[in-house]
Length: 366
Image 1 (cartoon, rainbow, N blue to C red):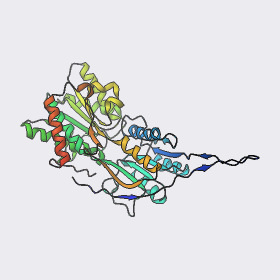
Image 2 (cartoon, rainbow, N blue to C red; image 1 turned 45 degrees about the horizontal axis):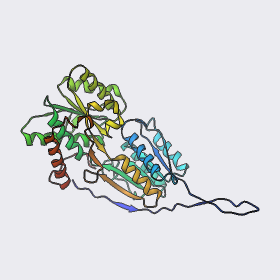
Image 3 (cartoon, one colour; image 1 turned 180 degrees about the vertical axis):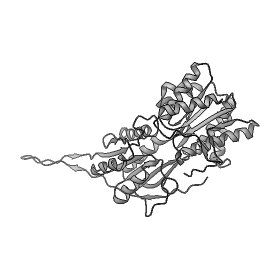
Image 4 (spheres, rainbow, N blue to C red; image 1 turned 30 degrees about the vertical axis):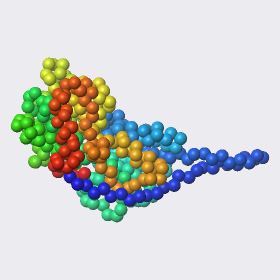
């Protein structure tokens, strides 16, 4: 998979605020200007255990890196109608950068950026050159830093791992909604299972998704935990013993179902998505073999620091296996349960993806 990353440099100046002079002993005291980094969440909320929460971690990491210069705050969206309103609020607060979180905020962010060309923006999970909007926008996007992740690569590793770990010969994946940022994970997972089958002459089945047909199971939500629990229960009933939800907080419902199945004596486990589940949803860590991660926190932190320090670049950042922006999380509780031979195979497959020898297919362009 080849990508062209276009960046246009935009310089910003951070001015010093001068204190007023007092009489009768005039003096001038230089005070460091505060750079305000602002973030608008999607409807999943700041504690979604997924990309909103991780984006906020990136904002806080930027503040921690330069606490004398940077302060950060967020506004939470409870419905799509809040997107433009929250962005407008932050425009009025003179934010140094406005970070918007999620594919669904693409239109609102683009409109605000076009109307305010001197305002710096970053958007998570949106590439205007491909899947973020139905049509390519006119004009330049030099004031938007688009942060996207080629998760077909690490999801391919996840599928390979699942195929190597299943005892029933059935694994499963499902999405929150049918968006490109969701199905790219499912494509990679499906392809990884097929590659394992080809290498090992096995016949592991994937429930919930077909990469060639581009159809499968979706919860219709990123917040409905009951839907996640129901979907996971169905997969377990059909014989799947490893489940990979690509559905944000909905996956917590699946984790509850996996926990209940384990308590009932069924050997079922799962993968988490976007973040390291053993950190973001630690209560369910014993059931997470691994997590298929995006380097969201690092990408957001970098965008904020660049804006604060006058090195902001619009265009597109693509997280990959090679640059650490799309990786499998550590195995944590499963470190001794994943066979050493399978771990060695995963490392070899990873290097072949990085080198281009293996090129995972996807119908969801980055």
